[in-house]
Picture 1 (tube, rainbow, N blue to C red):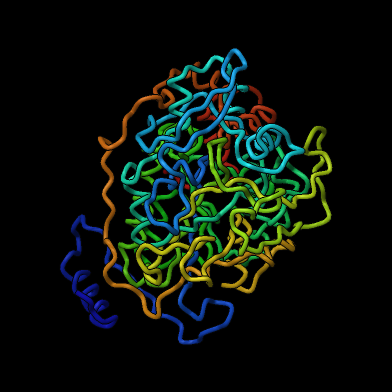
Picture 2: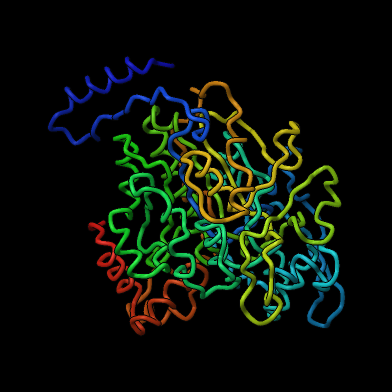
Length: 510
């Protein structure tokens, strides 16, 4: 049943009067919406842009089994070629099924590996996305046929009830690509600054983009980062982190800020990277904890309807993690052969080129990486919306990369980073396809751990010695954070890193 705003506030006030001294949550607060509509603020509809960035999954793996013709998924039974241990041609079929919760060994996703995945038999050949299984078996020659089949198995429709459920209830960006064909850190740099300033590999520190990030440009009142243990943004350094003390808050504070209508214009949410249970959905950490996190963020946001009405939530992944995707990313030779009506220029963000030896030396940042899952949530979005190259509505046939986040912030606030690509990127304004906000959205998303096969997840119960020794085995965000802390402070436990960040950022106890 729909109720008016004044009546809603009266109900809230009445609730407050009858629950004094009780253990129930405080009443909801709704600040009156501003009457002024500015062209940089999505016609006044959206005041809060919230980004939850997860880790290392491809579009095909997570959303490729969605059944709509606009979704541009991958067919059950599609054949992927590789060479077996004897060097003979072999193939494995894509299967719509139930992969194990955690996946190991980790597929390659550095610059060299991604080039091989996209270009198949040679980087000098046209891109055909034929090299995924071939590269996986080359990097891990001892993998069994079962493990190869698990690598080629994607989540069937319904096997990720939270992520896939929100995609169907709201909208999916079916052609959201990571910003460069490489690994986590440089792609997250593009998320925050619209450039990596030459970085193409893991191990790069955010200090090279400090001063140029969206957080440096926005007034402090307009942004906030919510985290669990240590955010990847700590790689900007202790000095920057300390300067921004007061901007970092535990995720539990997000729930309180929604209830009291105190969200900033731009919110960035980081998963739990260091101390288990890890919920970034990195392959070795599994998907179940991440599904629980997505449900938690959604349920918090819809718990205050008037805040949800003026919010846009983006659930997106930093890069594809080496998992198969069938769509050639823009910028690579032949990328639009299957989509001749699509036009997209990959704009170089600045004058800086790749600064390491190997295939990335001199890289001009004019190609995108593989597709990643991207789900948009707002009452201003029609159910089952798709924004991508196969959209039925030609105005929705758009291309996104991580700089679309910065473009969206720029359109909302008028604040831009110094990145040509960010200024040219498609904004999420295209996703708001309703004249009025919906009232029929789900008020909660259920999470049930029993739905997820708990096979393959990285062991979460470790001794203190094992926690310390695990640094060398960490991958992705966790590996970068542990390696940076070890370089600064020597060999130490994950708990020591968490405590160090707490001191530097002056955050309160969890």
